Length: 435
Image 1: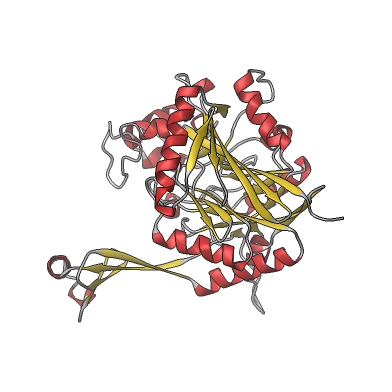
Image 2: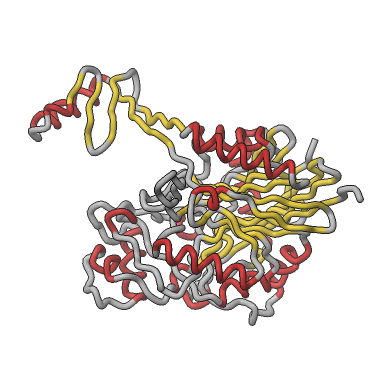
C-alpha cells in the first residue's frame, strides 16, 4: 500500500478547563468538523490535567509572571471527543505541580486515548516521539520547548542516579552585548553596590547575567548543541519509522515575529526530517514560512483560552500578588488581570496584555495542511475566535465571523511577508499557494 493524501489539522495552545461537548452552535461545530475531518489533529496542551496530587512548584522558580494550570480529567475525554489525536506536553507549565502531576497526567491522557509527547519520567522519555496510524500514512510526533522555568527540564539517567521527570527542554546560553556607555553604567552600578569583583576586563556579571562590552546592545542566544542534537536524532529516527513527522515547538517570543534563534532552530528541525513545525507560546499569532517545501507555523495562537476559570491556585500565588493565602480563585484572576493590563502596578511583574493585546490573545488559527504522496500540497488557515464579554463563556474556539476572519488572516499574511509567504483570502479562509 502506498502513502496517499494525508490531512493534518494543527492548532496552537490549548488552555481548556471546562466541558465543551454540550455546545451545538454552528461556529463551534465547524471547528469540530475540521478536527474530525483530518487524518490527524494536534495541539499543545498548556493546561495541566490532574487532580492536585502533586505539590505546586515554588514561586521562586515559577517566576513572578507565571500562574498555575489545572483542569480535571474529563478535559482529556472532551479533547478526544472533539477530534484531537496528538498532544504536545512540553511547555513552561509542564511541571506546575511537579513529577507526581506529570505522571498522573500521562495516565489520564492514556485512558482518554490521546497520544502524547514532550514530557516524561526522564529525559529519554520526554524526548521520545509517539506515533499514530492513519489510512494515509504513519505519523510521528514530538514536542519540545525553548523557554521554561528552571524546574521544568527533564534530566538524564546516570550510572548511579535515576533520571529527573520533566519536559523536553532546549536550553540556550545567553549573554548580553552592551555598548561603551551601558558597560560603564553597569560597572559603576556594581561597584557602588559593593560588588566590584563582578567587574572584569571587558565583562560585567550583574543580576545573574553576563554583560560583555561591544558595539551595540544585543542579546546573544546560543542553543545547547546537545539538546538540539538529541532532538534532531529523535526526529531522524522517527522519520525512518513513519511517513511524516510533526513537531510542536513551544517558544515565547514576545510579539508577532519570532526571534532569529527560533527561526534557526525550526529550520534545523526541518533539515533533520520534520515535515511540519507547529509553533505556540507567544499567545499571539505569528507568520508562516515554507522552508524547503515544509511549513513552519511559528505561532497559531490560543486555540482554547479558559485559564480564567481554573478552580484553585496555590496560596503561594495569592501571597505573591499581595493577597491573603485564603483568597478565592476569581479574586486572584481579577487581580492578575489588573496587573497584566497595567491598571495596577506590581513590582517584578510586567504588564503583558495592555491595549488591544488582550483581545489578540483570543484570536487563533487552525492550519489545515495537506500532503500528497509526501509532498506539501496545500495549507488552509481557518480563523478562530475565543472571545466573549462574559468570562463564563469566554475561551471556547469558534470559527470567526467574516469581519474577524478577514482581520486575522490579513494579519497572518502580514506577519508572513518576511518569509515570502503569500496568503490570499478566499471566502473567510486563508489560502497559501504552494509552488
